[in-house]
Each structure stands twice: as structure tokens, then as C-alpha cells.
Image (cartoon, rainbow, N blue to C red):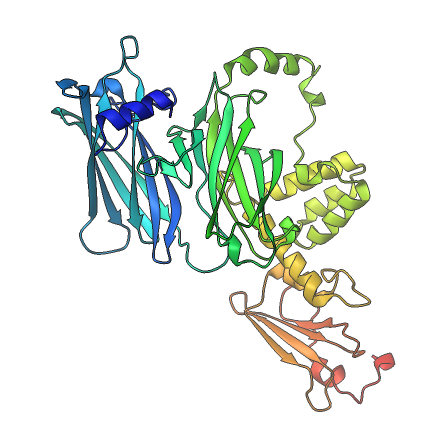
Amino acid sequence: MNRTTLLLFRLLAPALLAAAPLVPLAAQPTPMGLAVSHSCFAYNDSAAAVEFDIQFSSNALTYRQEKDGTIGKLYAHLIFTPENATGEPLGVDWVTAVAKPAAGSAGEAMGTVRSVLLAPGNYSVLLYAADAGEKTHADSVSFTVTVPSFSGHSLKLSDVQFVADAVPSEDAANPYFKNGYLITPVVVPEMGPPFLSLNTYVEVYNADAVMSPEVHLSYKLANKNKVIFYERQVTLPKTGNHSTVDIQAFPLDSMPSGEYFVLVRAYNDAERMHAKDSVSVYRAFSISNPAFDSTIAPALSAAAPTKRQVVEIIDPIYAGMRESELDEEYAKVRYIASEPEKRLWESLSGADAKARFLTAFWGARDRTPGTPENEERDAYYKRVEEARSLYSAPMTPKGWDSDRGRVLLQYGKPDNVDRHYQDFNRKPYEIWTYSGLNYTFVFLDRPQTGLYKLVHSTAPSEVHYENWETDYAPLSKNWNDQ
């Protein structure tokens, strides 16, 4: 929002919401150039403040001479219908005053904003907008909103909001004011020339409640195939306030046109990836970079003699690893590899080939390819860390290389664990039950050193020995005889 617009706001519409010039309109779905975005911010334990940023064309309004100048007015009405709930829908309406654009500025994209308090849940939303001076000129868009809960004392993040400008200000009466800044939102998330930059605004909550003196943020940019091409780490000092603001700018001039994601994760300590208290949010955006597409991209393509010589994309997680490190990564996941995958791995040599294999291995298991995170891989590696924490022993120092670790990785967490550590005349043992699969696993600490071995299971292709309790478990049995 420029200072000229702020002056017009103060002079022309002190009692109404400001209409701020926004980024140029991209191709719009409605005759009025109507577009809307929303971002959720913490308010209290039972409600979130959902900010609705609305963009419309100045050509959508009729203008009349008033004492403060030539003014047009937009009437906006939001209707919220909770999903799976009864009761009347919630309606919110307001009017925005707009000064007539200067000659030569017809069709300028204008904006209005309104924050609404909503309880956590899913909502169907209808936005109806009309020219207040000519009600027959109207349009509407519908969309859905998922409102998260910000309750509790753990780290929380607001939505990532894309902004065109963030200017320090004390003008708290301005509807675009947030936490000491006047925020000009980007409603249509297509970043294009002349300002090829992604600017983000995010709020971190409950940083004051964690024990560490700082809170850490990780920003990752990824393409639509979830390949991360840029990462930035940010450390924010604790201010003693419930919320902390972070604003970042990422240049995009060297990126081709396409669909992308920004992923933001907050941690409560410098470990970042291993912090127990962490939270993440992401948002999609697109890049329109015709200069890159028409000049640099063809040059890069011409530099590759044949298509066969183009190296496949390697996930940055594996790109810098040595071959021995990649072998270690495969050792963690071999339990869930198919037989063809196991044979293929055995035929590979070299870090490059193995990095491509692991990239494809997890890509094939990604159940949500339209998002920047691979939830299946994330869940699996959480089990790896759990196995390392719970099942490490002198003979199985990694935890996941133990029998219990292997079963945890291959079958997931059991529905029930029946532990017998001090039964009369019995060596320590555990019985794991998977109710949905109808599988049982029995692990026995035969040498009584903490090394639990699988001695019986009802799962196919696993060891099956129904007499384990009489032949293996009694203390009277000699370990060397078994």
C-alpha cells in the first residue's frame, strides 16, 4: 500500500474499510475481476481470526461526485455455512469506498479486507459482491475454508500470507494494520514481472512458552514434484509476547514458470529437524517468468545433447550423500521394499544411481503428490527415530536394526503391547498385537541382556513357533542349548 493510497484512505473513507491498490490482476474468473484469499491467525482458544482479502476491478463500480471527491462503493457479503452442523449460516457484510482512479488507470485492481472470528472447523463460504451504486452489477464466488485450532501451549503457526508490501506503521486504525506493519496482501498467488519475488508474512505463537531462548524457522521452496530447491533458516529471539512476526522475501527471477510451494516449519530449539516441539504450514503459489522461459530455459535445454543424457531430479535429501550414507538410508527402508526394488538396489553402484533410486522409492509411496510434504516418508522416519530411542542395545545399537525395530518399521505401531518383564520363572518377553491385521508377534529376551528376539508370529513369512512358551521362555532352560 503506497502513501498516496493511505492519504486517500484517511481523507475519503475514515469510517469505511480502505480500498488499496494491489498487484495487477491476473486472469480472473468473474466479470468484476473478483478474487479472494484467506489466512487464519490466532485469536483465542475457541476461535481464530480469519482474514479475507478481496480483490476487484475498479471498472466494476459506478462513481458519483461526493463532498470528498468522486467515489465508488463496493458492497461485499460473506456467508459461512459450517460443514456437518445445523443452525443458521453466519453472514457478514460491509461497504468499501473507492476513489475514482486517475485517467489512464482504468481497470486497476482494488482491494478490501475483513477479519471474521470463526470456531475451528470446515466451512463452505459464499462471497457476494455488488456495485453499491448499481446493484444489478454483481458477482459471486464460492470456496471452502478450514479453520485450525490455536489452543494449547505448544508452538503454533498462522497461515503463510503472501504480501506485496509490509511497511512499519503505528496506524492501528487501518484495516491492513497487523503487528506494527501495514500489510498489502497478494490475493492472486501468481508471482510475475516486474517484481519477481515471493514475500511472506507469518506469525509464530507460544514461542514465549518454550524453554529455549530462541525460536527457529525453516523456509523451503519446492516445485510441484516436491523437489526442494531452496532453504533458509531463521532464528528469532523471544520477545515475551504471545506472537512473533517474521517477514521474508525470496527472489524468483531465476525460476521457470510453473507451480510451487513454500513450506514453513517452526522449532523450539536449534536442532530444528529433531525438535520434539515443531509445527509446519505450507501454501501453493505459481510463477510467471516469460523472460526465463523464452531465453534461459531453451539455452539450458540446448546444452543437453540428448534426452538420455539428462540426469533425473534427485531429492536434495540425498543429493549430497556419500554412497555409504545412501546404503545406510536404504538399510532403514529395506523392510518395506518390494522384491523387484530389492533386486534393483542390489544391481546399483555409485552414489548418483542410489540417490535416484531413493528419490523414486519415496515418490512412488507419496499419497498426496499435490502437497510439498511426503507424509508417508515423514511417518516412517518418525518410527525410525522411535526405534532408535526405544530399542537400542549393545548388539543392535541403531534400534531399527533390532527385531522389534524391524517389525515397528514394517508393520507400524502395534495396537497393543503386553509386557512381561518379571513373570515367575519366565524370561522377559513382549507380545505385540495388530488387531486390524490379526497378527501377533512375540519377542523374548532369551539371554536377559535386553536383546529381544522374535520367536513367534502369526504373520505370513515370519518365524512361527507355537511352543515358544514351553521351549524358550522358562528360566530353567539353558541358553546354549536353544
